[in-house]
Amino acid sequence: MRKLAAGNWKMNGTSADLAEASALKAAHPAPGVDILLCPPATLLSRLSDSVGATIATGGQDCHAAASGAHTGDISAPMLADAGASHVILGHSERRTDHAETDADVHAKTQAALAAGLTALVCVGETQAQREAGKTLDVVGRQLAGSVPDSATAATLVIAYEPVWAIGSGRVPTLEQIAEVHDFIRGELTARFGADARAMRLLYGGSVKPANAAEIFAISNVDGALVGGASLKARDFSAIVTALENAAPD
Ligand code: PEP
Image (tube, rainbow, N blue to C red; front, side):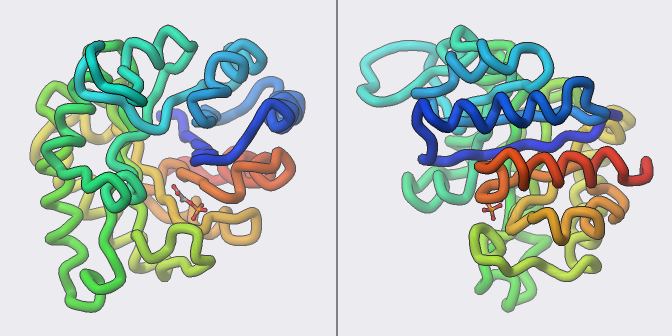
């Protein structure tokens, strides 16, 4: 499977930041891994046009309906029309800020697949859940509730993002990451059989150029979902290079 370096710009970026995507493309004209940038929706179309086939683009959320009276929302077909091939769903900031449930994420993931998008579904425990020894329960429940049966290795990517590691500079130990990624692979295999071996599992949460290589050396880590360090081409490029240099699983 090709590994994946995905950048989530969140609510950051205006026209001037399109130059960062162009610089990333210039640094990786023929990348050895898949690169995905998920800018704010306002930049999606222009960024997709400018980075072309070298870098895939994605939305950061979509509505479960294809169209309708939902002021401010964006549907999966609209993302596809703007050039997106992927969409991030169930990010912990959506789950927290917008009270999204696993059922919501499930419905949005179905909508994404119906629109021909690959869904990048996020799961992960809070600090309190980890301290209570509930990490695998929480992740297992989120996976079961958020991922529809129709998902395949071509249309589903899972990002394990401990909520407490996002934007905090705190990273789980390599053993903790390995434990959860092995667990996710097992859960997906129990549900999807052999196809699960090709489903990409990303780690997300304070991935930086300085820690990327050691994270990418963990088995069942097939790439990263990167927030803050994806905003600047120089940082994200270093992470892409670390992923290109990682030994195959
Ligand atoms: C994220 O929000 O998906 C994320 C991983 O953010 P950061 O890399 O900034 O921790």
